[in-house]
Image (tube, rainbow, N blue to C red; front, side):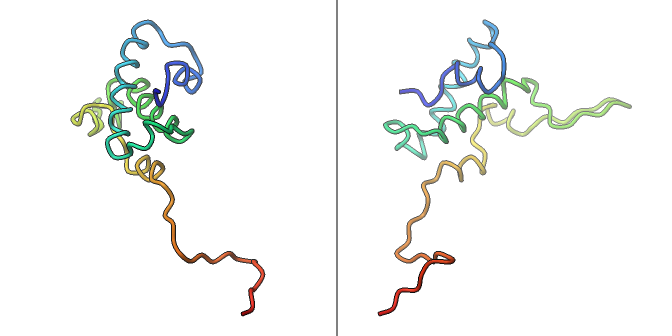
Length: 119
C-alpha cells in the first residue's frame, strides 16, 4: 500500500498534474516513501494521515520548486540553491521526522484540571 498517490498530490496542489509532472512525481513518491519507511517501517503496514501528508510535502517541495531556489534577488541578479538539491532533491526534514515519530509513552501523566484522587 502506497503512502500517497498522484491524486493526493493533485488535491494538495490544487490542479491536475501534467503528463511530465506525473512521470516525475511517480518516481519522487517512491523515493519519499522509501525515505519514510527506512526509519519508520510501521507505516508500510499502517499508513496514516500524517504519513500521507509528509510524503506529499516531500514531493511538493520539489515539484513546486524544481530549480531548488531558496533565495532570489533582482538587481545584480543572484539566487541561492537549497541545500536539498545537493542531497538528492527529495528529503525528510527534521520537522517531518518529528511529525512521524510516535508519541512518547510514560508511566505517569499530569492532567491539568483533573479531579484529585485520594488514597
